[in-house]
Amino acid sequence: MTASYIPFNAAGASLCSEQTIDAQIQYLKQEQLLGGYLCAEKHADSWQQLYQSIGRLIGCEPRNIALQESATRGLLSALMSLPWQSGDEIVICDFEYGANYVALLQLAKRYQVSIKRVAVKDGSISAEDMANAVNSKTRLVLLTWVPSHNGVVCPAEAIGQALMERKKSLGLSFVYAVDACQAVGQMPVDVAALACDFLCATGRKFLRAPRGTGFLYVSDELLEQNYCPVVTDHFAAPLKSDKQFELRDDAKRFELWEANWSARMGLKVAVEQLLEQQSSIYFQLSERAEQVRSALGSIDQITLCDTGDKQSAIITFYWSDKPAKVVYQHLLDDRISSSVVTPDAGLLDLTRRQISELNRVSVHTYNDESDIEALQKALKKVV
Image (tube, rainbow, N blue to C red; front, side):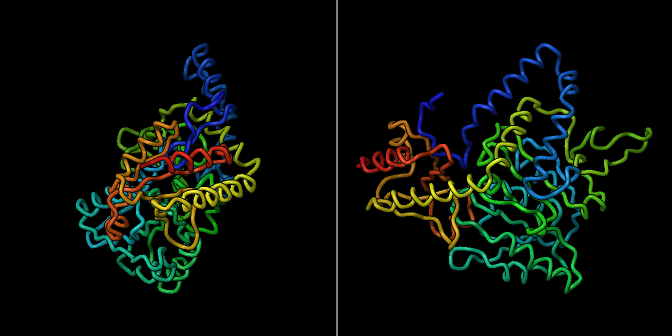
């Protein structure tokens, strides 16, 4: 099947592979014949394989994985499980994703906690600065590894290691959570190297899985502390009596019973395909991104807006005298799908840089040189 539009919005929702689509369709057909519960039961081995594959992808055991509907859903569940107290502090940087920041503002209002922002320097964030920002009041350090509004790649592993050293040397107790929504699928992810307690990711972006899929990683240390999600059910916390429930001892305590099982079958296939050729995919994504930046940089009216020394397959830019929505529509008229970065996607960073909106293109392995040439040609026609 040939896409009717040239897709340059992997950071929004990538195209699924034919195998991923077929897996979903076949599962839906089986579900119609067997009924939802029996069909899910007959695929018990597939679900176990899914947890195992995600564990292989990020370097953990299946028990540390909770399947989710999205990265945001997973992160919110994780944050709301923490034992917040008045006076607690949350440490972030200006690259924080808008949806995450809304959740932090809600926490600040509900529990009277404060949000401490670490300044961006030279277009990125310093691991030393993040570590120096924590103290005895810190309950949470939250990092968006790859922002959706800026092609910068934050040094998540270096930050994790610096935080771990700081925690040990000062005897501190806080949680390090990583939003890897835009990272999983376009770069290696190792939770041990990250030294993180929580990590959330979605399926629909660079992982090329269906919408409505994702996962949450929960460290063994946090599982042992029995943090309880605010929203749960008797799958995550089985009832023991009319007055008592008991949390599961694995990360599934962050799941709910009901789910879109056909989408999960698609997620399984997408993860397995990534595992088969990780190095090649990551290299191709980096190469394609460089080609796009070069093509866009050759157009006088375009200013590339990604910061930092290390950049992702997300490319943001603005046109010298055209609103982002006008450029977006021009590309759409040429049958090229892209995206517009709105202010609340990365409010802190965009406000600091005095940027109101941006155009965004994001590439994947299904984009070839002819796609990039078509993108460049279409942009050159903007007048």
